[in-house]
Length: 215
Image 1: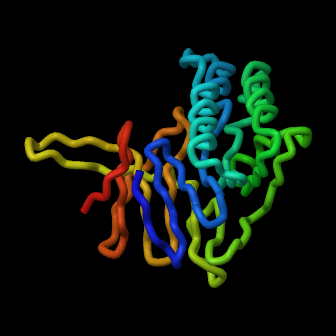
Image 2: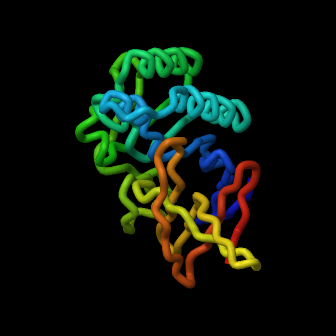
């Protein structure tokens, strides 16, 4: 875990690809794309089962470790309508029952537009366009805002690391710019987009067990 001070607030960056805002007991994740593997299977593509259960277990452990009272999801909750398979929904329903007291807010992303909101019975508040909780603004799209420092998703950022032996490794990353931060996609089966950092950006590479700032 790496701890940052942004706008006089404390943010913990976890290798499980999440951010914990200490002052507000808020856990932040983005782009889980639940049901993506089920979507591909529905299309006839043979991909492994269990990615949703794995991601829900990772989320459970993060909530247990941080004792967060609020979860904010920065967009793309479900991947697609076809991904809302019976098994996927059953696993997610059970997870929600186990965290019945947790406040959950979803900032609708581009995939949510066609995948649809979570069932109302799950008690998840869905917000269009993002919202401000000073000094931060939560948004799916990485846009600047006059209302505060923006924490966003959508891009699935990854960074290319070069070894001394000439080898290269691409890993997910957190990117913190002067006014906007990008969080890595939370979902296991989501892929990533290699970004080109600017001189003023701080980049934190995500490994299996640690987060490391890279130049």
